[in-house]
Amino acid sequence: MSEYGQELFAQTQPLSGPALDYLYARQCVVPPEDSHLRYHPALRHPRGYVGPALIALVTDAATNLPLTLHRTWIKSNGSKADVDPPRLLLQGHRKAGGVIRLWSDQEVTMGLGVCEGIETSLSLAHGFTPVWSMVDAGNLASFPALPGIEALLIGADNDAAGTKAARQCATCWTKAGKLVRVLVPQDRGDLNDLAMEPQ
Image 1 (cartoon, rainbow, N blue to C red):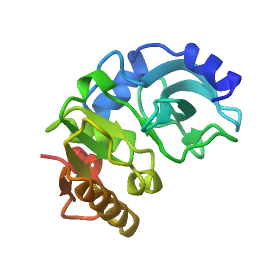
Image 2: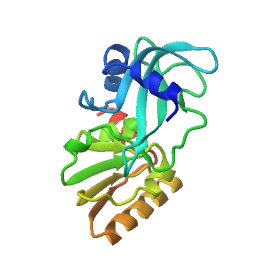
Image 3: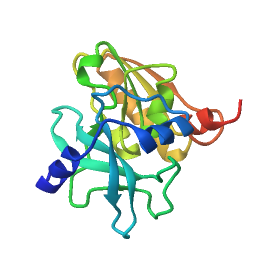
Image 4: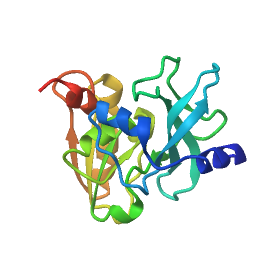
């Protein structure tokens, strides 16, 4: 990761204030303090907006090498920021092969839950931890079977790209002798959409 990316991540803080409000409003489980999901109180968007943001460190799935940062802009009240696009990766950085370790490697003993997005992963955490975010369908599809993890729970997005990526990931891990289960919401959407539905 570039020097700029390293400096930016060094400016982040543990999740607090608007970041927590955003996660609670999205029905997300708040990850542990050593999570790679952090908070920046005033981050500038390329379109000029300055406001709070969630910043996630994307690391190589196998080596843990820092690759890039995933940024989500929010308002001071914890709602989504009125800026397009509200989520951005750092330009010029590699994303392929990366994951967001919402729980640390030390917490991953036998099993791991994975989804595409951060909020979707933190919705899966209502029923299973530890969880990681794969960033997108491409990274989920190519997520390699990792030594020491014997079981994988995949929370798939219920769309063509999401279900295809989940199948590809499941096939890879099954061939490696791992126990794999795939969860797909009955209706179109993802697990966070399901968590956000009125009870």
